[in-house]
Image (cartoon, rainbow, N blue to C red; front, side, top):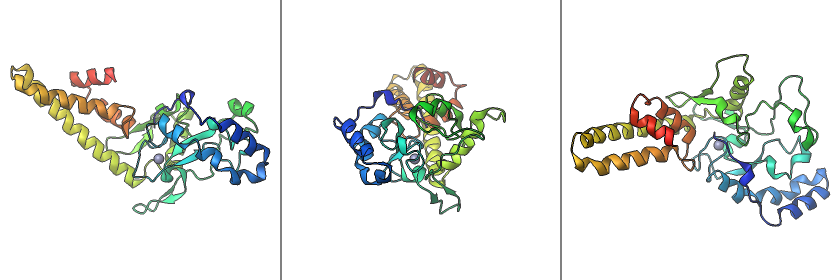
Length: 259
Ligand SMILES: [Zn+2]
């Protein structure tokens, strides 16, 4: 997960009018107006470079849907608000069973809150609501997640008193962030990164040692490593974490600092 800045979202020109008409049709008819959120799909996808807001994958986890962060079944007032829309893959968005582990995950219509917290009944009450689910459109929330080298998503904090820890745990389960397919994709990315780090190191050593012929291979391997960190790349938050494990190598530190 990485921060998706919705300030740059550009909805379709007629979105405001469509949303107003849908809202005027009454809460009981929300389901008849899916065109309101569907018409935003391309804008939402564009903001994340076509990646699911929750897992940062493009294809393996389905064709993608417009998720309501606050479920429209419980938060009817938020059904047509673009700031409540997230682009999500099926496995993050819908309740599904992992065929390899038998574990059930996916957000569905769930939206747990901290104990004793009141559900927001209008947009003005959002600031007083304390959701347990991390929100990729909240700048601080993606930092609550961390990843082990073997591809498993974990909370960044191990402090039980830190509310972001329980939010991370809840979100990993709710968004199915440890689905076996996703862990496998992370493991594959970690291997590729390791190979590229070795490639940079070997060619840099040759180049610095006077073998000028090593420069093109050194340069292209550095480019490939930088591409893993690019916001357009799948699993870029995980890739950053993997690369950080090599930061004792000065060239890795330089690449991380520049990204
Ligand atoms: Zn996803």
